[in-house]
Image (cartoon, rainbow, N blue to C red):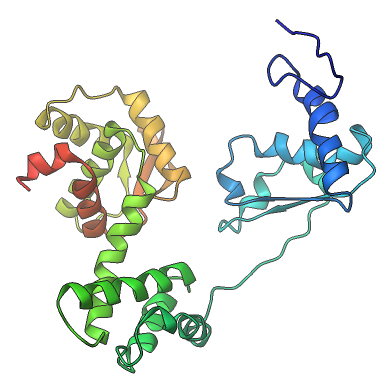
Length: 295
């Protein structure tokens, strides 16, 4: 039920179309508070489920919603092929410009870490800590966030071990933990069945070192065994397929379709990260697996 507002500007939050909400609530606020224009930044835009509708709406703001200020949209993605997923009608109205930022190089990462040296007491960092941290991060796609996390974790490890100096060895120890930490963040909030499917894939990977890709049917078969081992009713094939594809969306897995001859088309999956780090992260974040493994 829509209640008529006493004040035309006092628009109810429910019972309105998106267009009405923009016209009566959003654009008046933007016009009043940010008359110079609006910049919309969408991080990890390739993971947005309705990206084409969002971009289409934003690109037609001035022509369709009749606003007299610019609306600029910035989408950020690590997927260099993402632009191919934007529909032609959106491309036409949006007229996007693409900018590619190369990964940080080792000397750039050193400069970033030097600016964070003040997080440590004077004199506690060995001369090799920052170069070693930058080298390891540069090998992993020049990820600055990974470099900073690695830097911090090295200090925490030295503190836990009672050492007065943070050394390159602490950085190497931290490097193993960072993989597990990052993975645990990626699967945070994942339902138990989703984690068990990943655990099944790590089991397949460990038992078949010569293989990199595994069919949905192979993963589902091992998953059923794992689920019963932890006394959980396994999900059906179609639900398992949905969960696997969600892991593709978040970057945990990679998938591809293949022609199987007489067997028709089938989809295969491969882990994006290190198998042992993935396995450890799953066990650390899943009490049922901890019980299974006797942790």
